[in-house]
Image (cartoon, rainbow, N blue to C red):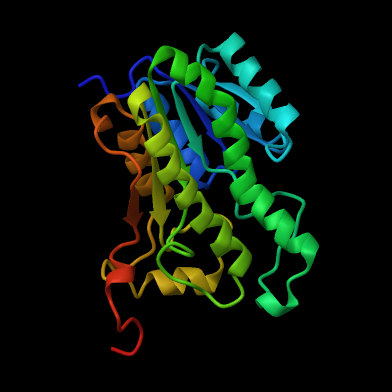
Amino acid sequence: MAGVQGRVALVTGAGSESGIGFACAKLLQAAGARVAITSTTGRIFDRQKELGGSCHAATADLTRPEQVAALVAEVEAEVGPIDIVVNNAGMVQTGHDLPGTPLRETSDEAWNFGLAISLTSAFNVTRAVLPGMRARRYGRIVQMSSVTGPVVGIAGSSTYAAAKAGMLGMTRALAIEEGGHGITANCIGPGWIQTGSSSEDEITAGRYTPVGRPGTPEEIGHVAVFLASEEASYLTGQMIVVDGGNTIQEYKVAL
């Protein structure tokens, strides 16, 4: 199986040592990909040290197209043409507090910022890598969506839900537009995944899934590696839900 061997993969939002992005980067590298990682802060260089010298790291604000263009140019110069993108950046950003609020109380600033970090960032990165992928007639775009928005809702999460649902809609259109150019685009919909930023309530909710626990970042990462592989060539425009079966059950806590 060719998998991702020798392919160049860019993983965004990989700054947290306990996060999904870093787990995806580690597993892609272990599977033979040449990996580049990015986040908004210098902690990305700590992750680079953990992955070793063959990993390339850079900081960038992915909501700014000019920084995305510079990032893509840097990765392609230092590592090679980008074959795989895992758009994981979003949900939270270091240095910015984004509390959940009802829609009626959501400010313009909070709405715009939430969409920017979770949706516009993925748009900017995807748009930047598409010309090269089209020219080489190969590409794997993996978007980190969520069950929140496309499948379920949570009070106070309207901005996040809108961004993640928008990511799925964008991915479906992208799959249609680029399918004839050897490019696939898919989403992953994580459920309750235990990371360093998980609250106690989120961890408790994970215990009421059919599996009986929250998921791990690595369990998301393995799905990302498959979607990034050459073998996933006939899978496009889809969202794979990875939630321990949580969204298939009606009763969660009552029983």
